[in-house]
Image (cartoon, rainbow, N blue to C red; front, side, top):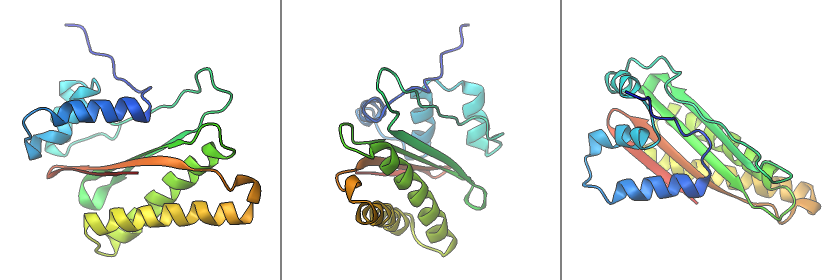
Length: 173
């Protein structure tokens, strides 16, 4: 049987569409993270490892391509949170046509991951960790805008997902 291609070159709109398509299916909380990964072409053998918690950490990957644009304004981070046996996946898409969109997306993903891991280590709930991480990412961008007025219009979208054996939780702006 032919192996399905793993889609690693998806932008935020394509990812949102894949998630929206999954939302139309009957929801099975414990199965949802695996359905999400399957929608992006992950092999069943990788999904079996993830279901049992035996991931070799190469089962989750990402890539960004510049395409025809003069600058790549997407940024992503994949973080395995071993203590929680969970993945944190963060993707930001800088606002095209504005100075600093790529910088804004990098600041956002780095700030989000740092704040999220700190919040969770401190005992925060997922909801609180998500909200504080969004605030932190936004504050970091605002700080850069203030320090460099030529970047005052920079901005980004961001989507973050937390995948564990309990299911998936996500937030987007």
